[in-house]
Image (tube, rainbow, N blue to C red; front, side, top):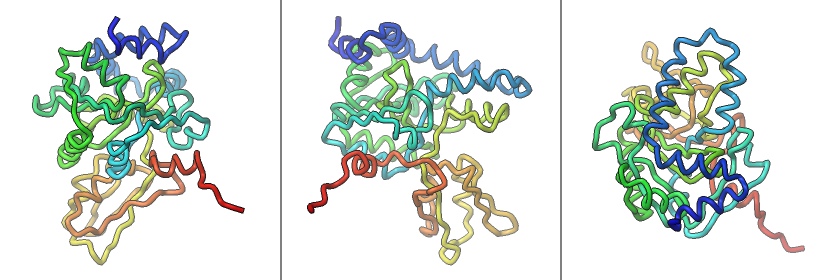
Length: 301
């Protein structure tokens, strides 16, 4: 048995069923996600079917993602120590019932592999190698078992350069969580609405019920400085969620549609937009904030 298989088996303990699911999920990553994509595309014909709502919630509670701002992503790729935060408070960050553990073990051990979503949706070949595993557990499994998906070991700097490259072409950054893979963080992907099965699932599921979503917002909204704005409409063109619209030269912003991905902030040539933690939304996956809440500083008496 390969070392990465032992690590995976140990992670699941007595839940051998989850180990088998985890093992097969990554071993047959592409057909698994391709099948999911076919199901997702069928949802547009089932928006009338209310009985799908409880089934959708059951699935999304077990397999979902968290949108990351660029700065929160950078903090993940700067880790030089393990992070293990598993508490009910995590649901304020990742608002789902089960897969909410924030764990990065040996975070400097990183691998990148072909994205099954991009492969299934016919994305450009040069964009396929974009799924990133942070931590020896998942990364070593990819390297030892998933040769057909072109895995390769990268440094933290190389991983962040991959993120930078995709964000410049309208890809948002997401952390994926799945009960069958341990219910924790570990896979960071570069996702575009045209080629991400997860984002497509959320969009179509919301056509059945607005409460159905497998995409958790980052926890941020954006502020706008009208005096700086040059009305170039770059933010409107960049936003993947239609949260920013210009009508007759006037900018309109809907915080409820904004997932706080920060693309508009990075793309604005006039620096007229800034990000802030929105108290009306879930908490960000900000490692500094999370660790300070878990281990508040000692105040001498």
